[in-house]
Length: 290
Image 1 (cartoon, rainbow, N blue to C red):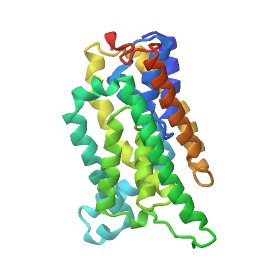
Image 2 (cartoon, one colour; image 1 turned 90 degrees about the vertical axis):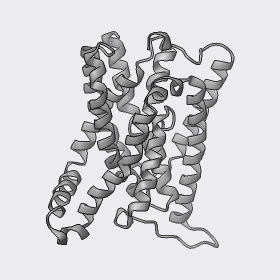
Image 3 (cartoon, one colour; image 1 turned 180 degrees about the vertical axis):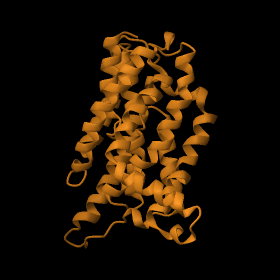
Image 4 (cartoon, helix red, strand yellow; image 1 turned 60 degrees about the horizontal axis):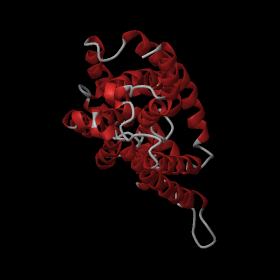
């Protein structure tokens, strides 16, 4: 991988990680369209450490409060009813599905799941799911002529059942094209949470999963499967761009609809199907050296 490739891929990772359009799919597609080798699951996992570092910094006050309350709840029974302490447990519970499936499906994640036809399918299907979830949220928030405004749930109402459902949604993002934020935010909206609550828990839930995945894949860099220099460079670029994107996105979702992302996903998925069908792109483009 050249330094120019690592710069572009780091830029793509930072721009797409927090948007509901799938960063892993865009890394895969960027390489395919440019005629580069597929950067691979290991490269994706390591560069995600950069974007998750942006999450750690952006939500540093929330994270510090949650971690502190969680540790104190281990020895102080009175703290176990504290919302922040409960959030610590819920993040742990919600991380179980992706941890189990990530290890179980490792070979599929690094192989068959990177087929461009599968990516096109997940882009379209999850785009439709996000669109339905967004419409339901808008209906509750705006009401209508014969429909009263319905109050949506906040994170203070999050329980173990919903936490596990969020976790299962996050695990779906092991397939490129699904999108970690897209799946978890859609799940949250469908369960009746506000846009801000769904996005905030989505980002907090991703922290242990992404950091663990990146640390696990670091061994591939040591074995020569990933170039250290370009990968670190891409990770730094992803961090800088990712921080700017997450700050913008958290403001965007408070007043705007997710529909622009829905349309984008569907159009991109259809275009990808057309290009593969016409033979312009191979469904396994770049995988020979992946």
